[in-house]
Image 1 (cartoon, rainbow, N blue to C red):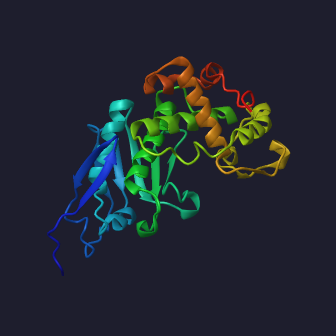
Image 2 (cartoon, helix red, strand yellow):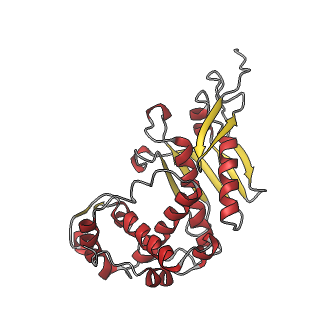
Image 3 (spheres, rainbow, N blue to C red):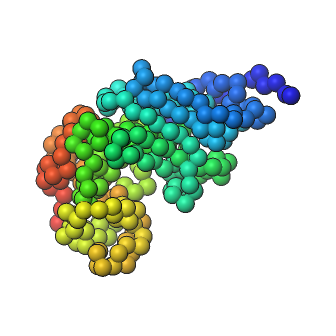
Length: 276
């Protein structure tokens, strides 16, 4: 059996600095495939991360040290947003649920705050920067987890979903600066006003309305039209939170996670049709 002795290196630009990570001998050796999950403890044990054999197989031979990468990312997240311990699973995601421009998808259990992150199966076809998008996805989901487990709670209305998603986006972009997330500029001013007129009367509606966040096909009965531009709700949610941060001044991310949806929305002054 071939023996792999070399190490790969991954250069990543984070917050204007170049971070060089030396990868393990296993990573960069195409002849070695991990067959069992690996558990990583990060941020002094606050996060226990399970890297599945699937995602480790994807990392093998591509000079990506996922163990070190998650440790570095989560240490930065922990410094910016302290909170209770949680578990994280990083695996290969369903390609139908992953935006091509992002390359990762996250889910946080609304009851426990446990996090799952899915990455593209074939990184060679990946159009996005895997290291950047893994970092931002982790940041967004940790923000949600803190809001669920020690903050204001996730809530159940459409407005709750918009604000929670917007806060997660804002934190992810602050923690790992770079090009804006694709949904930040997904709508023109006219589109945002038009969609807001459909959504605003339904903000108190309880239920899972993922289609509002992602756009595309929606219930014509509920929303008055059969489709929304892609990422409509995610764009609106981010703008609500961005307006809140701008109007109230800089606040800590812990304080934001503890602030209720109602308080954020009211203080934001969000009114997209005013400028259209």
